[in-house]
Image 1 (cartoon, rainbow, N blue to C red):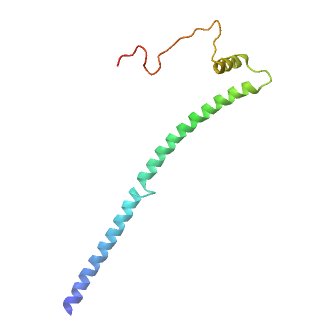
Image 2 (cartoon, rainbow, N blue to C red; image 1 turned 45 degrees about the vertical axis):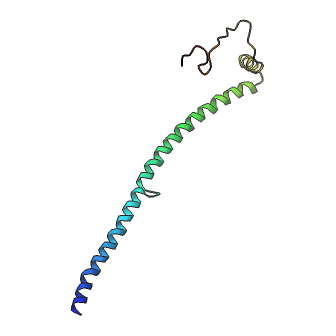
Image 3 (cartoon, rainbow, N blue to C red; image 1 turned 180 degrees about the horizontal axis):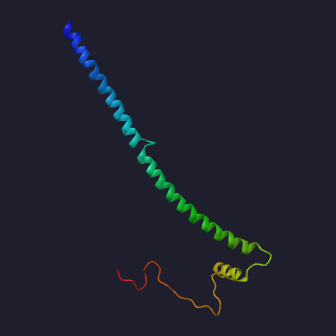
Length: 112
């Protein structure tokens, strides 16, 4: 009887501390590696920075296109822009234009 009481008095606190240690170890691991952990927070910060740069590039591109559209919408269409667009659509060049042919995809004059 005394042996059981003594064993229980020793093993019960040890089991309690082991379970408590495992639970706190899991919580520390989850705080570091979990879905909302510190590593994930750093990854989100990097992703936000990349998306911010992409957003800035897209906003710049949109402003450029809005400027071109505004030139086409005004009462007096910009003649240079009209000429440029007409030549691109009709695939024509002016009589005073210089045409330079370049090799596409390294087909002409490239050594492989």
